[in-house]
Length: 510
Image (cartoon, rainbow, N blue to C red; front, side, top):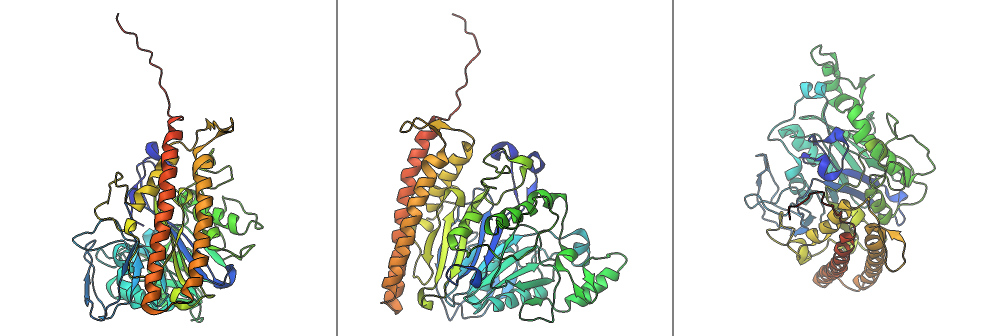
């Protein structure tokens, strides 16, 4: 993710993060044998601040542009003429006519991509192979890769070729999936990368820290890496001016070579892995202060999209570390006020491929929003998700983003305060009084809507199917936003009861 400033005074963050430039996002991946219905699931919170986000579909073309020039950092790269249809969630405003930070999407071959999970390259790694200013970056990655790939593995290969040839501007983690498999890829330096296939029966929760360890490159079904990576890391490890770590007996530990595991990670990153594993594998008792966690674990129970949403909504929920409570130790939670959207990309294996792909999308903070199940075989996206010119316009009531962001900001301002519920006479707060009941009811209805529209979709094909799925997306968007706007009005009324009243100690002359 992009770097940004977190102001401790405004957001109540630990003083360690005051006015510091940090990176954000949390990723969850779940293999198809670990899910409730055999789907592959890849998901991520996009954390950046007050940027509004859109949801778009880009239609297929056989005569597209053959050159891409990034308005973000000047990357120039060639493109195939033929591009697949794909969805994306770009920033709410174009830069010189170009959408940037597409972040997440699914193409017409039912290949999903989420980009990126930011990381940090250590000093030795940068000395060995520094980042490239006009290399590929998060801002352009989705649009340069997703329209041109036909499998998850092909996504890794295409992005890897660009990194090796033109360099990378950032340290990033990137996720690709199709109906069969998931690949997690890390770009650790200017021209190196590594990728691992997610085991079908396991999951991973990944913070802003490099996590790909020892590479078994003889196992090409489960590992990939940049050309001659082992030879390069060995040479850098033997260079007296560099002394790069990570080379061990003919192989490479990629995170040790290029990543970090320091005091910052102990507060900012590792606790998020602990929290996600606590939720999905509660039988595994672990300390939040461990120096490392197993990357891939089996869940205690099969995982649904809703369960992934629970992980991405967690602020150490139900623990003494909760940022909505005492926030002991001030660890960085998964769900934060700077979330701008959260997505769960689901490729189903129990329905026909024409409507197997679902892009679950929650605008703003997922803890105070709702995941809408959007089909991706569509001709257009819901109107409120592509309102023009609302980049930072919270007064725009037509915008889906600002509807859900309003909820998040009101709740965040009063998350530690309670009021007397006039209907029960008991103390409550905004989350339990307003947000959770609305979220539960809307989620239940959206789930029922999806089951019903799946039934109808079985009877349709071609353009009629696409039109129907497009229509259902709009209906669900209208329904959820109307419910949320009603709830926002209630939030404002109830928050007025929580507003502090200052008693003046001034005296006035009569």
